[in-house]
Picture 1: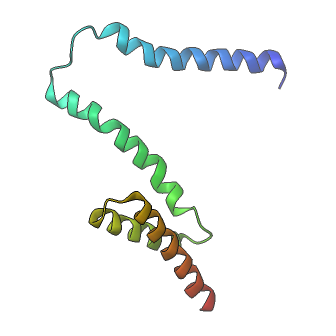
Picture 2 (picture 1 turned 30 degrees about the vertical axis):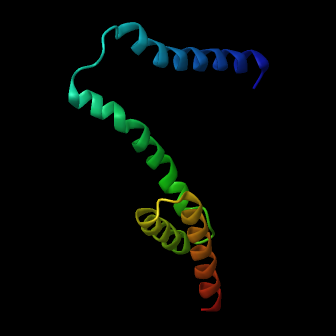
Length: 105
């Protein structure tokens, strides 16, 4: 790809990204009062983060089985403790032990 095409693509992508972010600010002058729309907009970041994180958590290790077991352990500990450090340590140890057991079989 030559430089001219690259900068043209970059300009189009920057413009479209800017428009997606700027149009709602330009069109919405009043505060949104509809509770359905407010709750929908409130949960969008969580849904996007989940959609981006969940598949990568399943393919983070060499085995989907150990990744799923580690993800399950992380979810269980997160509901119980709420400590991010403890959740991460538990998930890592669970995946490590699962991989060790799977290598023995």
